[in-house]
Image (tube, rainbow, N blue to C red):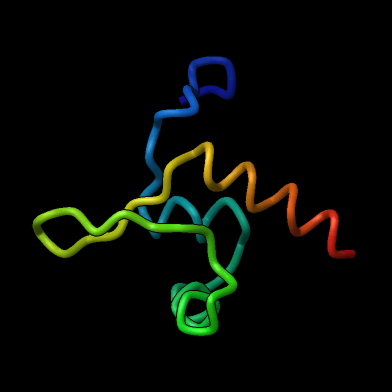
Length: 66
């Protein structure tokens, strides 16, 4: 999916989130445990999704904290 075809309502998988930031899944889950990860949605099969809009807002907040 190209950046132009992404919508704020799109949802990322944990793997997509980790790949985008070049972090391990264990880092993601560590951040989540510490309350430092973006807000997630748990779907009925137990998997997590991250709204693209939440991800973008989270990145902006990270920039502000530098």
